Image 1 (cartoon, rainbow, N blue to C red):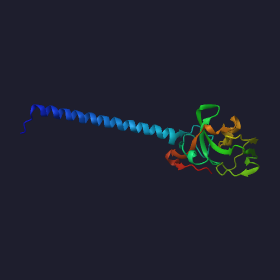
Image 2: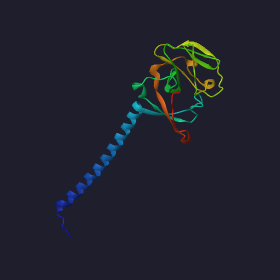
Image 3: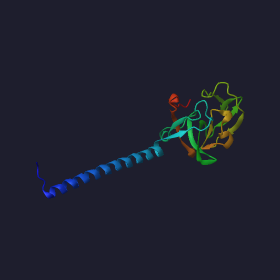
Length: 190
């Protein structure tokens, strides 16, 4: 049996307490780093969104959950047909999701359920076959704005109602449906 001198027992207890405190501090440090990373990712890189309405059917269904890239448009220009999330112009505390249809300076007309930009018909393969919707325009999209429309043109509060979308209101590009599992897929512009 090993004899412990009186000072050695105290040293061992102190070392044990320091080890316990170190483990606690390491755990707390890991939690703080994880939370900070999550916040940075959500603010600057990607963010999940919930689809509450049928305005983008059939592309996005009520209840779908999507991932939106907030950094895409820092490196690449938006493209016609991109699905974008933006601050609703009439109430910027709300987020909307629609399809980017036209850019500043373009003239847009919806006639006989077809899209015309600068008097040229633009195919919209993403719309449901046989969809009929009201005529609209012509409207000239002002510089620094977009025209955004829902795919479900008969059930969409979009630029036909509230006007052109200021570019500064765009949050990002929808890139992925991640829920429900049977609908997981990448979202493409066209």
